[in-house]
Length: 128
Image 1: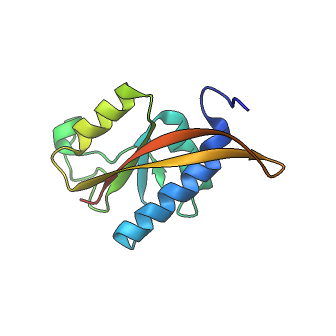
Image 2: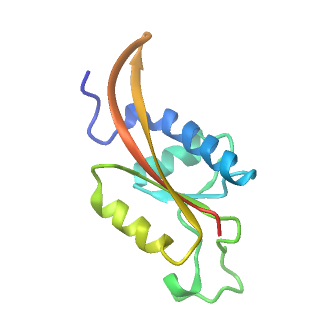
């Protein structure tokens, strides 16, 4: 009825919905996932695309030179629960100079077919 604070009852459903929305928007596999560590790691595991955990390195964010670093040419997604304002602010900051779509979706826990608690996930889909 109440779920766990970190949201583990929503991990698989979040990963599947995030992957579905990414593919619907871009038509390509999800390559990188970031945001709340637990949601990002779970998405890397549960998603059929098995994206890399963590946002790609970019020179203006990491100070790294782009010659040997992963780039964001394939885009990325950042996932946060709606009540995680610090995560949302970080995702908005990382996405602000890029082409992105902000979406929200609701996930609901189920046990033996019974509906349980819900949480809202905020997703930033950065296409370039």
